[in-house]
Image (cartoon, rainbow, N blue to C red; front, side):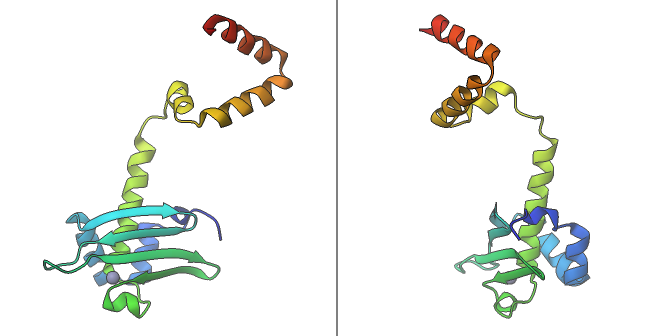
Amino acid sequence: VASDIATILHRDTLAVLVGDRTFEQGEACFAAGEVVEVAAGRGELRGTVRAAGSGRPPYVVRMWIRDDGVAYRCSCALGAKQELCMHTIAIALAHLDRERVAARRPAATLRERLAALDNGALLDRLVERARGDHALHAALLQICDELA
Ligand SMILES: [Zn+2]
């Protein structure tokens, strides 16, 4: 259940789940930039979609994995009936698109990855690792001497 929702979300699956018409509406909604935001958590996707017409609050969408498949909820009329609506399709497509872009990006360098880490946690892991690795232990001590 805790698996990434992206592993079960595919364009083809969505199209089959929802039918052509709603899928096309969702696609158009995503293409028009109506998806305000989308965030993926453990086994779920949350997002908001701009409502047509000014002054109306955006639709709030949630899609999550259940043992028997995918569940969804949206603040629109269809979503309230737990039916798969165009907004849910739109945030799913936005998520898939973002994943595709991320996959094309070159992997971060070692420097970038290290710089992004929590210093304390990194320190703990390095010390722990150096305990069983004499070469690493010596290298780290040398770095300490050089930088001190
Ligand atoms: Zn909806």
